[in-house]
Length: 205
Image (cartoon, rainbow, N blue to C red):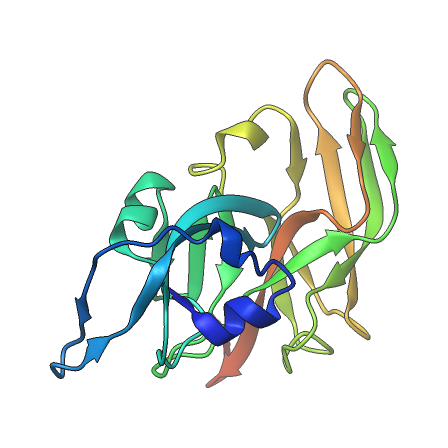
């Protein structure tokens, strides 16, 4: 579902593309929602873009609500232990009442061509808006390869203990493939998991 007012302000407002449908939506408290029609919305999550059929609805409190059919089609998962959301193999921070996300994404700040069998150390920029991504020790690691098959056998982001400064940190990359790999700035290549000292030990949130 998409909030009608948000759709109008999105810059992609196309009332001529709105397909009228005969549908009624009733929420848990029994309230009936006014469905204006159905259209295709371009939805961006992290580095991925989805074409999603949406019902345009008045008076819903959220800009957009994704249904279970979208989760099933795109193999999405909510990881409650880290406060993140998996979509197309990319792990994205989310906010929900019981736990604020601590994991943030890291993108390269420069373009590089990683030669076969070589490793380099580059500057990575941490996703802004996280109070613990500056001066807080944490673990830097690559994207989850069990859900991102396209990254397997390409290159590796070394798992390292680091302390970011001013939202930046060193990122160590190795190319295990047989050809050069071009990496572009701004592309998410890893994640930062902050750590905290509890009773003289280090524990991950």
